[in-house]
Length: 301
Image 1 (cartoon, rainbow, N blue to C red):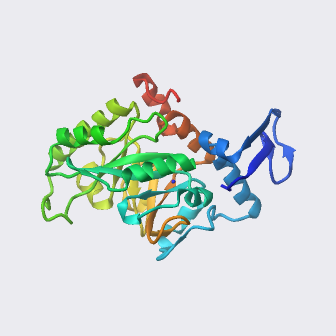
Image 2: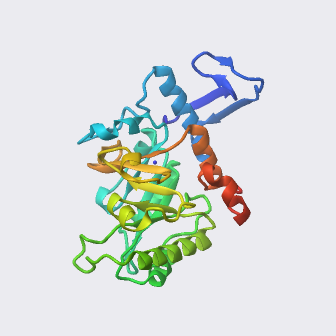
């Protein structure tokens, strides 16, 4: 979820490795890298550099304190980012961007009465550094969906330049206040209400983040027309999430990224640089454009 103070001068359809046009379109494109980042076009530059070097690790300056062989192929995805909360402490967002981070999802709210202490600092810092960012809400199952969405709207800016919002749905088993699991029908009803409210508030199709247990208990075979962000840190998503088409993959919680102290979650986007550019410009998974167009979504910024 770059290079600093750099610039790019090339042709659309041109190979940067060979310097020769690959197609009939030769309209020159010249811009500072900061401008490219704002338009999401820098992803193509990074992918080209990686291709020229002959490596499938698109971000060699990033790492993992405890790498797992089951998720090694995550490095082959050209579009990668992070998700963060107060636990990462102060973040040097310019270094995060310079490391090639293409997106960041930032914890904003939890339940109906908690705001992450570093939300606004991270929200503003990512924007100033040119890192596309979105906000996520962590669901607390012992608070009404109505209270939670009122709290989300009160504390998260409706920024048209932001990525779509994320609804983080996991069981609250770690919480002494709310250790219970709800019946599937009740949990789904709450999720649908919150997704609708997020979409109404932002005008963007929300993303569902989930883990293996919650997906099996509640989401399997449900809500197929929403983009899913899945956690799988020991195997590829296809091995853990039955019949689930995923858009984002959280593949480690012990990542290392310049600009972030200690552990940080690392994530990969499923597709190509072109598909990522399409997502940035429409706020929709490119695979869902046709099905969502009738709802007035995916029309572009």
